[in-house]
Image 1 (cartoon, helix red, strand yellow):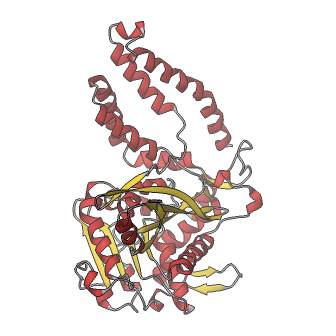
Image 2: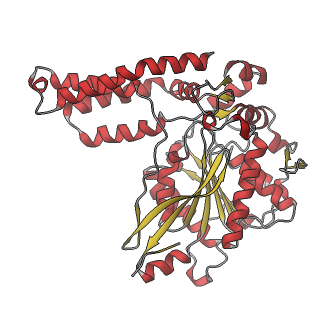
Image 3: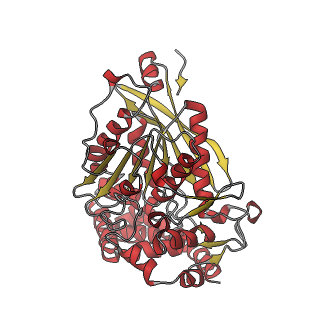
Length: 444
């Protein structure tokens, strides 16, 4: 019932948000008589803020049109490579008519970025993708909003997530021979499970795994997210945050954890910071600080765009990752597409390499949670296990922003290149320091 109430309220607010936008433009338009009134700029700023607080935020676009490769700007074309009921494997295809640039692009490693399915869209990793496109062939998992998936497509479980990842890895292996995998936040757990299962079966595993800010062992340095999962029972989550999609969406009747509830939780973690950000936005509008106001809009266009998660997937993630800790306890069995239960055994991974990345100030995945992957992957040689702690970085700073671009990405790039088997030894970039622990444009 709560979902229906929310949708009714949103529909009711929509014309008011549109009015606020129109009023804001009238008070700021030089040709409008209202612009000459006293306090017109403040009125415009106030209506603009009301509009942004009341509008509906749709899925953003990646919007990456070109990236620099050396001194050449390479054109980017997005396309869906594999379309599954709950996810698209999206490719960022690069075009160039410069022969030398084309040869460079062809020789670069293939990377599968596994985006989180934890509330926001894959576009949250836009900065990650943009950085990597200069040095890699890039694919990303673009998870669909569960309310847009008809009931006829069936349910979506945590096991299905693991199976999707395996399918995408095999797809890239069939095209390129092999690939590298990067998982950010929530998918570190299902990605490690997927690669573990492939190793246990004797399949070829990725050349490298980079795991960033994820809850491999959520018992370590527990955060507010971890504490909530431990303080509430499985039944509490099922009874209090799961609702059925209303009838005005394709997925009508599907049980989901609604995006609007997730967004409320995100804001509740730091309400004072968000209030200050919006007030600063109001003041910057008055001052005419276009750079600051545009930065605010870009951030909140992404932050406020949320998706519904299938209830089975969400509840099983809570139970498996945050309550029973099945991965680190060695008790996790995943059901294959054929219906067979298989035990997840990270110790069976003996090929490839592992890099874990944590932010010093991460308040979502605490210190040591991601690094715990090294203890689990005991079959990998110690020299193939690396760890990076990004000083001064919070959760988002390890995959987006200045620290990502200047500190984290150069090491990730070097790590991937070091383990790209096709690269001749003399062309390898310096490795990441080991820790004690483990005429016509052509496309590529």
